[in-house]
Figure 1 (cartoon, helix red, strand yellow):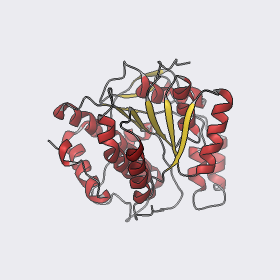
Figure 2 (spheres, helix red, strand yellow; figure 1 turned 180 degrees about the vertical axis):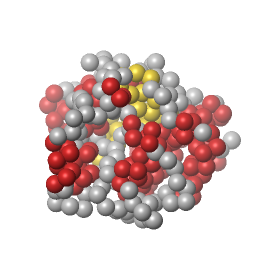
Figure 3 (tube, helix red, strand yellow; figure 1 turned 135 degrees about the vertical axis):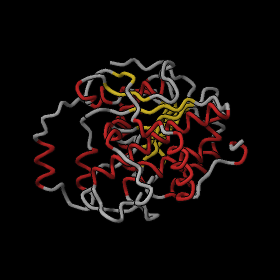
Length: 310
């Protein structure tokens, strides 16, 4: 199992910290000495996860705060309150997300749910917190993507899937967008001498509630076909302890390189130990990356402060 380097004195924000890879990352970063802010949509679930972690690690420094990445006003409120109480942020871990809801749903701001929650919300949060992140001695932003990003395509003519909703394709687009966010941040850091490490990761096929929760959105329970596929999927899977390790490596390891992408080294990239993996070609297209950033600023109304634009 990956041994997280000493994180004593570091302040980390983890989104989606109440379950799955977010909770595992929170537990192991806190066990290594970090003070972790658990950014969650439902406070009661966050507090329950905090209590579970404290039972195993009584000295863990944890704080639960609310954020709904599907609501840009909530993102702004979180960022403003955080900035009011902290002088810097060492590491932002963009982990939270939703996966393949069966029908097209929208965020509070009217964006397709996966593109809005998985990408536009984290984009807005990252940009709003960037001045605090850059005030840290060794600033780092980590963004969770997915193997689905390799099938992703950014359709600027229909980013919100209003013409024909295809849930898997919409998920792939949102995860490719996350990779683009990570890569463009890394490029900006070099161009503007920020000293920021921006890294992406994916968990392979990890047993979490992400697949089942997504399939339940808008329904009391997943459809019969969804339950059948989840119960009899022959693909190799791994437990969350291993599946979180690419994210932990990206968040904490001195060897993690800005602009790179980390995931499992096993069969089809679904399971295995953490390794450097290939960035999809679309995620390394500087012109496309810059265009998506510009479009995202327009959609969210969130842009870099003027001092960071130079």
